[in-house]
Image (cartoon, rainbow, N blue to C red; front, side, top):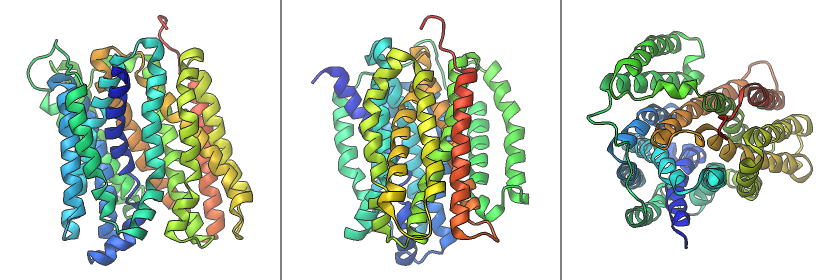
Length: 452
């Protein structure tokens, strides 16, 4: 096995574990509430606590990896994630589970950007999109498979195995990573990253993610949400100022002057809304409108990650040959078409193969194109010593888009005065419109550097 393939394998395993745990517990809420004597509101923090901590810590993790060593931080994140997975699996009380999930998210946030900055230097520029496609294939397929795997585990062994599965994978990845990965860091920097920019960045991202995640309870413009937005907005100028004047800021603002990077970040934000929103809407529709069991809904949704897996790998080669815009635009068109078809085809009577399977397959194909292509579009042309930072910023913005997509979808599905079916159709229509916005952003703004 070639060295670059080994690096791809070990970094993909860690990233896949982090991705799958964003969705695998979604189907376990009722079971956890019953076994740990929790309310629906308290159990929601098993999900939201992970999302908020993940988004908040991501912003600083790229700079930390660049400064202290990408292999070291990747291995540290992997160890934290694995140990906290055991804590979650053995949690005797709901409070312990929530705390374990927050620590799990910190581990995931540390390893994700470090993994990408370890992988890309192993490949020449002309093959990086292909490498990112394989890496992104693992992440996208894992996230989409989460509900199905969660359903199978809960049905067979109980919700705790959704966490126990991470332990052997994490140990194997840690041992293999220690052997295969090479240490790398930004040798031009000394000292510690600026603590003020870290605190402001973590707090502002965390507060925005909190407001989005709690929108069902707070409302999008309720007093608590407005307070969170207000504090976050007040912290952003301080964050920008510190990033300009600090010797070792958490974000190099020169990255934002790169058109290819900022356009891909904007497209990634928009894309995350239909991606994560559809995960919620699809599973909820199958259960609430067509009466599927949790396990049945998870299995029915499997067609999406299957097509995502099939499409991801050739996508990278096409991006290397044709450019990212030529690949992202058709991917967003396929994703938009898939949700528009769901809105137009589904009815109150269950008809999976004639009304749901084809749109779900198209969704998988769209995701298989978009996830690796947008990842690659964002970081492919960055300097090697800024890849972890750029990846962290891109993933942070995408995570905020995910929180927003879930929050908007939940709000759409609970519109008063409308039938359940009309609410699902409205949510899918919104997802389709946002998918079209991805096309507009990429056509209007994305330009690779002249050297490409």
